[in-house]
Length: 247
Image (cartoon, rainbow, N blue to C red; front, side, top):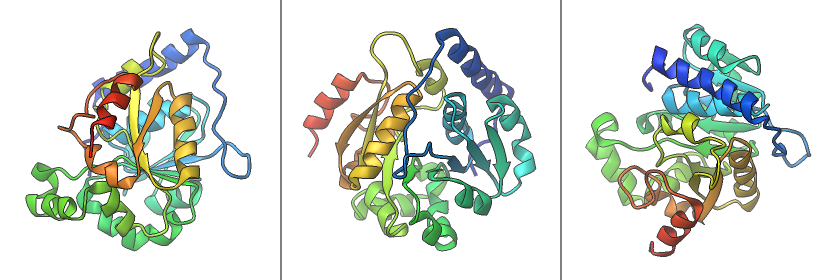
């Protein structure tokens, strides 16, 4: 599981509400294919999933965080505000039009077995999970690399799902600070094969105060991990220049 939220994490999330009120933000909401504002659910509610879910909630989206024990998410829900609730993974998959997967990559195969059919019906599956050797094991990382990277591996694990990789190369701690920053927005590199899913992801990312930069299809998802040229904090133009040089 992802690390639990600390008091420092909760203070950072509470600051999101202050920032939103100060800026007087009124986003033009992203829409699903039927014109509705999508409901968002997270599979995994650790630091990255919790931070992103909170940003979506502060932007006016209904969000369900999920965990094996939803009661363990009380502090996160309290910090994220009235647009949020907690549930089990099954409840989250049933709830969301958009599913954000934020788990150790070693859990991805089990998610595919348990919820793959449900995820294939969603407008968008945001994959922000990374295979990390020290956590998921060197053998798994080698397997993912041999498959062409995490983007293609997730597509194999979740056949039929409209997958977009995003927020894989940015530290969770940067999200509250950089959302809706003045001047040039923080760029978020994304990769996906489904054009409608990519368009929805782009709109959602804009609504929470960033600018998406499409670097290619899921085959380019191998670059959306820590330690690559796309990792870290970059402007959109910087990301476009970096992406242009990737094979």
